[in-house]
Length: 256
Image 1: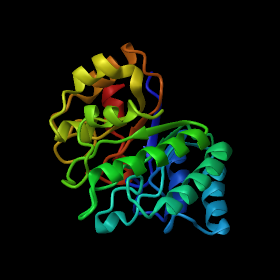
Image 2 (image 1 turned 60 degrees about the vertical axis):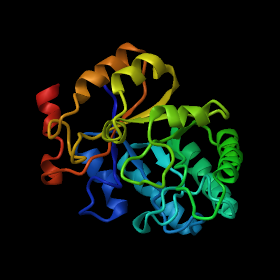
Image 3 (image 1 turned 45 degrees about the vertical axis):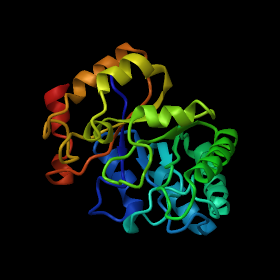
Image 4 (image 1 turned 180 degrees about the vertical axis):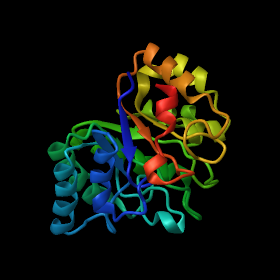
C-alpha cells in the first residue's frame, strides 16, 4: 500500500501556509512536505517555531523538505551550485537539520541551481559537491537531487544527470515522475535500473502537472513497479489541482 505525503507548497494554496498541514490532516493524510517555507535561508527563530508548531499541531509528519532555493518566483532553482552563496546553504542546512530531527523528516531536496552566466560550470560543480557533502553529513535523512523540467539553465534534466552527481557524493535521486516524463526520460528504465538509488518519489501527471488521470503518464503502473523493485518510501503528491482542494484527491478513490 502506497504511503502518500502532500506537498503543501503546491496544494491547499488557497490557505495561509501555516494552515495547510491541518488541512492535509483533515483530508486524511498523515504526512506533508514543503518547498523551503521561509523568505530567507536564515529565518527568524519565531518563524521556524511557528512552522514547526503548525506541523505538530496538525498531527502530521514533515516527511520531506526542500533546502533554500533562492528566489523561485524570479527563476532561481537552488543554491547548491552557486558560488558565493555557501553561507546561505549552510544556514538552510542548519535550519533543516533542526526541523528534521523535531518533525521526522526523512528526505531533504537540495535543488542544484541554474547555470550562471560568466561562471565556469566546473566551478559550480565543485561548489555543489562541497555543499552536498555538508548536507549529507549534517542532515539526519537522505539528501536527494531532483531533475527539473521547464528551466533550460538547470543542468539536471534526467535521472542520469542527477545520478552522475550522486556517484561523487552520498546523495540519492528524487524520482519526480512529472519532470522526468516532460524531459523525455524513460521512467520504466529508471525504475528497472536504479530503484535502489531513489531516495524520494513525487508525482503529477503530464502534460499539465495536474492530478493523476489528467494526462498521459501511467503513474499507478510506475508506482506498482517501484514497489515491486523495493521502494518503500513516501510518494509525494506535488500537483496543481484542476478542482477545489475538497475534490483534489478524488482520483484516489478510483485507483484504490
